[in-house]
Amino acid sequence: MTQFHSVMAGLVPAIHAAKRKKSWMRGSNPRMTFAISICFFFLVACPALADVSLNGRIEQGALVLGQALPGSRLTLDGVPVMVGPDGRFALGFAREAGPQSQLLIEEPGQPVHTRQLSVAPRSWDIQRIEGLPERQVTPDPKTLERIKRENEWIVEARSHSLPQALFASGFLQPADGRISGVFGSQRILNGQARSAHSGVDFAAPVGAPVLAAADGLVALAEGDLFYTGQTVMIDHGLGVNTVYAHLSAISVKLGQRVAKGERIGSIGASGRATGPHLHWGLTVGQVKLDPMSALNFSQPPPAARP
Ligand SMILES: [Zn+2]
Image 1 (cartoon, rainbow, N blue to C red):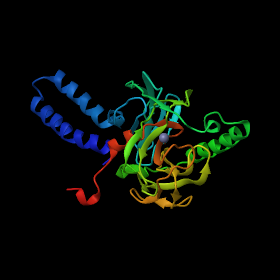
Image 2 (image 1 turned 180 degrees about the vertical axis):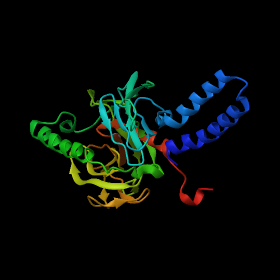
Image 3 (image 1 turned 45 degrees about the horizontal axis):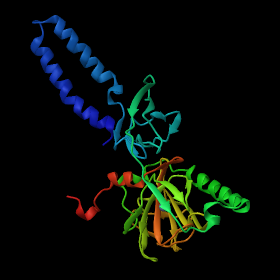
């Protein structure tokens, strides 16, 4: 049921109650009757009352899912938000977001209004990794060229997304294993400060299965990227994308449709890795998010549903 329908379903009994109250009071208090009539008029005539619903904790690094009226246009801090034909959308709050974000809402036939969102701060770990080959920590000019080119492929893969919420049935954790690296850590590699960790790492044996976190379309399947080695990216629609890195094998092809829980490859240590693990990343548009925030939208498998 859409937000609009759920709100309207809530309004119908209220309207009936207002009607009953109106006839009961007629003749006894004209001022009250007028006020109730005005309320009744606005309840029926103002779909703006439906507004926009947001689901998820609004904090740094978080994925938040939402529902607006179909046909709405939204902008988060000046960046357009993809809205599906059913009014669903996804928002991403960057590691550095906040303390306030502005959601500009343009609903069909309604004036534009802005919703101020408070973005809760998080604290970030410091992660020190020693023993990496020096060329992986401070790449030479030729390697920098390669990294730049590969990064363009990744940005390009994230810049096309299907216009529907393929993630509607929720997300699952794509690998079993000990969490060996969390999102957002400030990384110090061989003693040198580098960019923050952009995903979550699960340490697991080489060859263990890596699963699609949600339904989607394979947006990238590359065998040898400098940092991420054998890499798969999946487009889940409405700008939501997940990445699976350091694989030892890839079992899907570019453009292939995958289902949540389907095997897409195997755990490995390809690219810049000190041992076998899955690096799992999540983005909305180009904004890097904590993938663990997507697990707030996990749903039990069909057999477990009542
Ligand atoms: Zn990682």
